[in-house]
Length: 84
Image 1 (cartoon, rainbow, N blue to C red):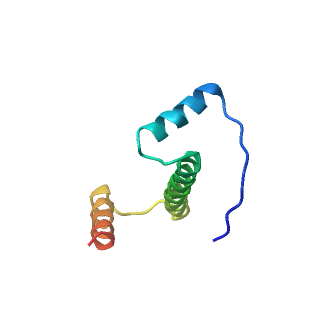
Image 2 (spheres, rainbow, N blue to C red):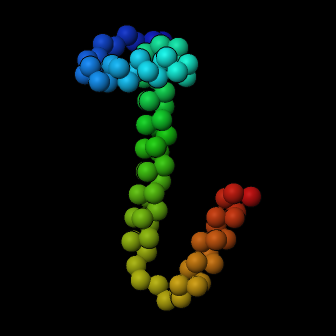
Image 3 (cartoon, rainbow, N blue to C red):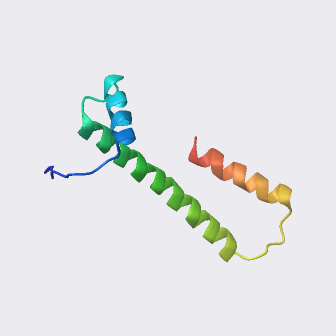
């Protein structure tokens, strides 16, 4: 994987925060910290996108004739199947 050098500007408070994160030992340098932030953001956006798709699917499906209890049972069944 090729690396691309970037230059960014941060406030004094942000710089101190970054230094504190490195001093804690969690990160070895600024680059590690920023790459971790990017990985976390990508993961968060992936989960958020899945949630948006599920909401759209629900809205597009219209009003159903099942009871709340039946819908809940189906949701639990799907959850168990995904996490088995």
